[in-house]
Image 1 (cartoon, rainbow, N blue to C red):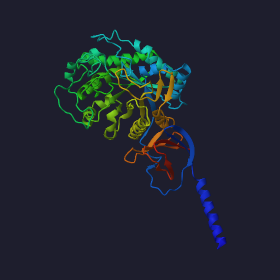
Image 2 (image 1 turned 45 degrees about the vertical axis):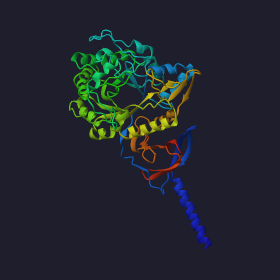
Image 3 (image 1 turned 60 degrees about the horizontal axis):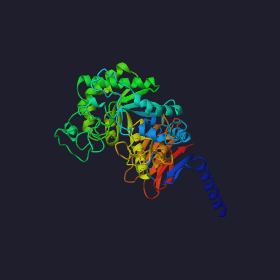
Image 4 (image 1 turned 135 degrees about the horizontal axis):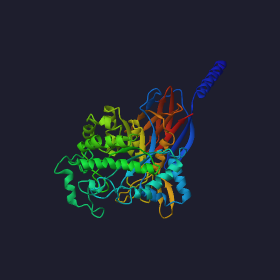
Length: 493
């Protein structure tokens, strides 16, 4: 009996050893509030008692990821310059170096002022200048271009795309940079808003915007439309002369944002008219190497977007579509119906200047959602801001890095680490294999396959208690317990 027991124990030891030999080593990087980017080791298992939350197959993928990026804004440049030079260089290295933390390789450039400019300006504020004789980028040469060139010193291969928040004011029906007014913030009269709706009542709290514009705020006259198409091309040319190649353009930031900061309201008819009849042919003639995307789309009113995309001419005019904010809600359905376009996320939601862990969890969820639904590229908003993160028009927003203007020091916010858990390991050429949205279990999960054909798992636990995570990767299992309110990245050896 004792001999038989010894044999069974020996067999059990051999089987345990065999299982360990075939268990794959995994680097586990986790972050919780106050304890970020902590590395430990775990192993993939050959079996599990748990039902996998997600199953991944290396032979099937959703898409191949290309680039992470951020927007270059004037207030970000100002915040950066509050730091000592040595720390400025460290921040830029962390953001843009191919070997840095976040590894951004794409930059968004605002054409004319956006809401994180110091104040309103455009490249041509001379009314009636249809020949664009007074066009210039003099303002950009003092702010955005130095900012971009500092980033290019760290990573010379950054790609750039551009979009306006508002056209020059003289090209709009209200002759002003915003769509709406607010006392003490801008000078637009309340009467100038009348042309926005013209009595149309379509309020619906389920959708954004609640009420849809009845009129284009860009003047729909052929002279203006053609001049604006030429304006884009002059902007691309002017930046090229500065050594900055813009490889993609979009006609408007948020055509359904009727705001007090730089904005322009468009109807589907106006969007089609400008992009198909003027913008696309002019760009093809003057800058055939520059891509035209439809964006940035910020509405969850799918009927508006489908009205644009159902025009058969659109497929020849634009190569891809950019979504942000409420537009992300209809991304899955639009991509399913229009699979031949390229898709990108164009602006991470900015929060309200809280700089807290909850805001970081929101960003983690958004990355998971957009990549899982086919976006090849992801653009963050402000990489760096000072103090409360307040815009020139009074909106407090979050950033990845926060500068204290009094002490001249920088803090890397929780959102920075939410981003790092993806961008530090999900490099260009990484395949998105499968994902699970954050639902009632608050466990967003995504599985990738790296260019080296290694599985990579990024998972969050947004619950107040630890939760079990089991993911099937081919014929093995990742079986771990995630800490409460944690971000996690699992790198296979």
